[in-house]
Length: 198
Image 1 (spheres, rainbow, N blue to C red):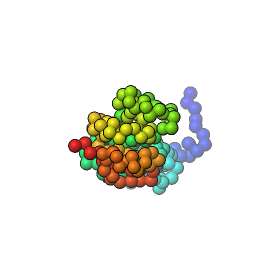
Image 2 (spheres, helix red, strand yellow):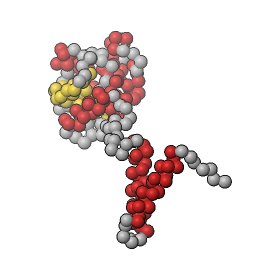
Image 3 (tube, one colour):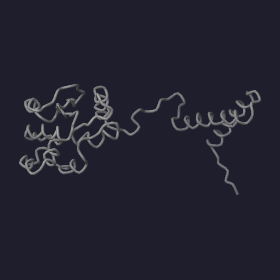
Image 4 (cartoon, rainbow, N blue to C red):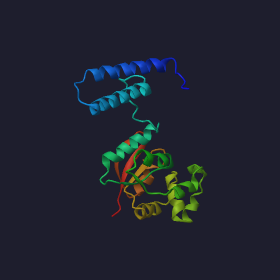
């Protein structure tokens, strides 16, 4: 036995079928195929109305609710990139979101390297650990630790980093002058630098 739906769904279905019948009646005899296309259009329009609640409403561009700073940084990279897939080094705050938002970006550091100091702030990391290996030094650098500038420059070249995104809360201006970087652009909270990998 088929259960009968009641309430809004019935009135909406009745309205939908009435609209479809009016559209079909208004068409010159064009066969089943034309009627099928019209029916699909009406179904899509009805579904949009059900999802949005207002057929005139616009969908949100940021449907995944990614932080606005990630979107702004991604747009900044997109405006300034000179290759299809730029290799980017960024801080831990952006790392886990940037590639999700813009899959054309290639991140210069692996998850394994990023996770070395994942739950530690820059002040809680012993700077002497940078001398144990390059992975530790790079991970520390992405957390805002001012590692030896010579080591940082070597790591940027070794990892073929094309762009470095600086969180303006990290790194002193003096330290930034010691790195082999060229300022490109900025958005609120972040600056973009091109790496000199010559």
